[in-house]
Amino acid sequence: MTSIFFSIYVIPKKIVKEKTMYYTAFLTLGFFATSAFIYAFLKITGICKEIVSIQVAITLMVRGLLWFLSIYIYALAIDKIGVSRAMQYQSLKTPFGVVLTLFFLQEFLVTNVVTITLSTVLTLASAILLTIRKDTDKKIDKMGILYAIISAILLATTNLLQKWVTNQGIVYSQHIFTAMSSFLFACIYILLKDKNIKNVICIPKKSMGFTILGGCAFYFASFFQALAYKQLPASIVTIIVQLSSIWSILIGIVVFKEIDIEKHWKRISLGIITTILSIVILL
Image 1 (cartoon, rainbow, N blue to C red):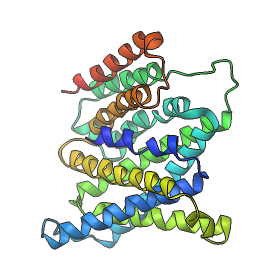
Image 2 (image 1 turned 30 degrees about the horizontal axis):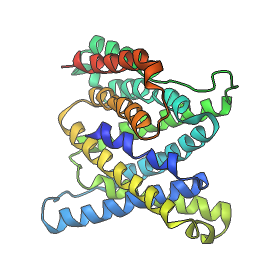
Image 3 (image 1 turned 120 degrees about the vertical axis):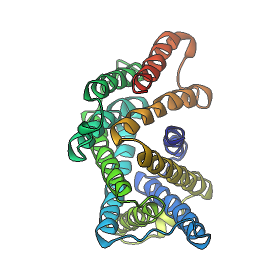
């Protein structure tokens, strides 16, 4: 489920043509609104009885800042080098994330490092195979590549923080703090850049709606990822979530007609098989 929602939440970027900072603002708004509604529901119904310490709350606020920066920088990368190229370099979040969790959370003590390493290599190979570019003669913007790699590092770090928080027993309450922080920093950024919020309010309602729905989808991606972290080591979850690359390819083919399936079916098939294999060897 996490991988599906991770592939869905970036779709608005392909539809909405507004400035990147406005897109980011409404994406974080959708994440915050969904988090607030579901958090209130879980509290009222008694499902969520968690008590969040100051240390955990601060960690989640930092995660919100890093997530805001990661999606903003990734959006800039897409603007410069396109979705397919940006996806290839952002897929580095998988090996970055595996390394971080293996060492900082000491998961090497409870996982098979050899298997995890092999699965990570296969994940990288699948990311390269599933990156089918157009305009191969076009010069690649190096800043776009740099942005995508920075975004990958930031996302890997946010996943590390989420796993740590989940290990503290905070599952249902974590998203409201992260979402509130990301939306707050998005608003602060716009105020610093535009000096007011008039321009962002004036963007078309259709663009607002699509982007807010993207933020809603990210909530469920984060929510299901937290549930997965509760049951599995983060290094394994990180690799499994790479399934989102398959869903992204399918969306590109079916919805946006980005890829000529007849021309690239061999490469796509091999990429999908490699992704599935990287997960199967973990079982």
